[in-house]
Image 1 (cartoon, rainbow, N blue to C red):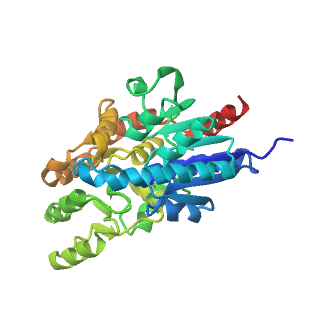
Image 2 (image 1 turned 90 degrees about the horizontal axis):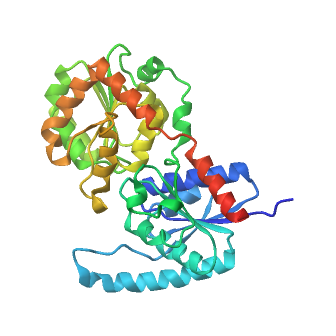
Image 3 (image 1 turned 30 degrees about the vertical axis):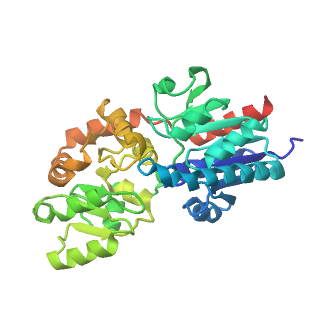
Length: 369
């Protein structure tokens, strides 16, 4: 009889880190139900709510990111890092994991670094095509590095790399509705194309402003748009729309709960270029226009987007040009069946399905070895 495994999974800060972490945890539990899994996150970050909601225990560290613009503020950051390392050591000593998994984000730094120092095998998962600072530092002691893009040898030792793809919300591919049924559920006409606009759970200011500035163009077009503004911007957007007469072919919501149905209805998706979003678009074979956020470290969203653009699997509109170019390009593309089919086929070809199960197997291999 196999002894119960104990696994620490650390990282977070954004949905792009949390969704893969939870997917990996679920895959481990599916294969070995007796496994004990403990998450370690950063205090005050979204993982402290999302992880318990998914049924897992989580410990929080006071760790924070470095302020590159105001170096003097990093005195407190260094103190928090020192404290987090001590706390991580205590957590690891008490939980006694067989293996530690890092998914990027502030908390994975002290946790994985301390785990490796204590002789525990570590695995890191890098979601982006441009590796994050934390994972580049952790790569030296990691035994396995799971990546989502080719060419990651420029960041990590080649012999440690395994191309697995990004674990995504697999339930997105399990939608039971047909395209027509999903569109009708939205109150739209199945004969006309549908554009899904998403900017993440909090929203994306530039994308929202691009839609608001193009209401007349949308009103006069044949497309139908389902627009997730993000909770942060919803009330302001709703107020502006009420003053400007919202087009009938534009449906607005703060957050979409049934994302599987929204994706099924969509002929074209407008999105930021976060790693999880891109992996979902490829898994579902969805044509997309990507608007990389300029407010991320190392401009990694542009690198993510270009990986698809180079293979004619997505279109790109830069953030600074979105207000003028985004909606006209989206309408033109949504009405171009040939372009939609080409983008969909090429995106689907880039998908790496079953990523979570592949990574779970690598975790088990580390324990066995």
